[in-house]
Length: 318
Image 1: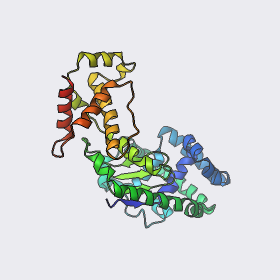
Image 2: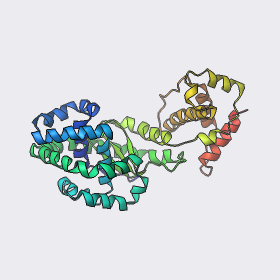
Image 3: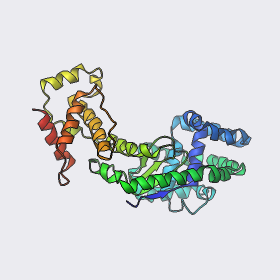
Image 4: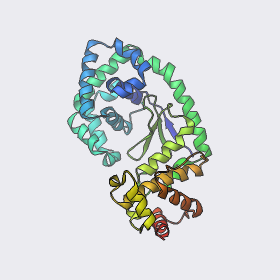
C-alpha cells in the first residue's frame, strides 16, 4: 500500500514535555519522566509549573503545537530549537497551510491566545533536556523500538489495506489517510488522526491491535443517524429501546439505531480482515440484527453507504 512512515525527534520531544505536565501521561511514562525531570534546572521547573496551568485551561495544548509543526515543511530538516525560534513565523506558515481549514476551534483559540506565550517556555525546557542528554537517550533507547514497530506495521499494512477497507464505509469525509503515518514514542495508547491526513500511533500499540484502532476511528467519527431515520421500528424494537437502561441518552430511537449500527459495523469490518473473536454486547439486541444483515447482504462497491444503510433500515422495519 506504500504507507509513508515518519519518525520525528522534534514531535517526540514535545510529547515528552507533555508527559511532564500531565499527571496521567506522567504515570504512564513514569520511568522515562523520572529519567530527566528530577535533574531539570530551577528555571525549567518554574516554566513547567506555568505550562501545567496552561494545560489545565487548555488540556492537551502540547498536541496543538504538534499539529502546528506537523504541517511545517521544515519539520524534518531543522533542529527543534531553530524551528521554535521564530514562533511568529510558525503562526503565519500554519495559517497559510491548507490544513488550517480543518483545525479544531480549540486549536485556533490556543494559537490566538497562548501559543506565542508558551513557545519560549517550551524552548527553554528543550535546551535543558538536551543538556541532560535527552537526545542521546531517545536515539539509543527509543529509536530502535520505533523502527522495529514501524517495520511490523508496514508488513501487516502491505498484507491488508485496512485504510481502504475502512474508507469504504466513510460518509463524512473523515477518512484515515493511507500513507501519512507518524510513529512516536510518547503518543500514548491512542491512534489519532490530525487534519484528516496525519495518522499518529506509537510502539505501545501492538501490531495485532492496529486494525482495531483504525476501524474504531473510522466508525466513531462518522455520523449515520440521518440514514437511520428511515427506520420504522417494530413493536419489538420499540420495547427494546424503551427498556434499555440508557434509553434517555440516545436522543430517540434513531440515535439508538445509530449506536447499534456502529457497534455492528465495527465487528463486521474487523471480521472481514481476519478477526473472529469479537462479540456484540447483549445489551443491544438490534446490533445483532444489523450484523446479520451485513453478513447476509454485502454492500456493492457502486452503492453508496447512505443508500445501503437506508435500504437496510427499511428491511429491518418489516
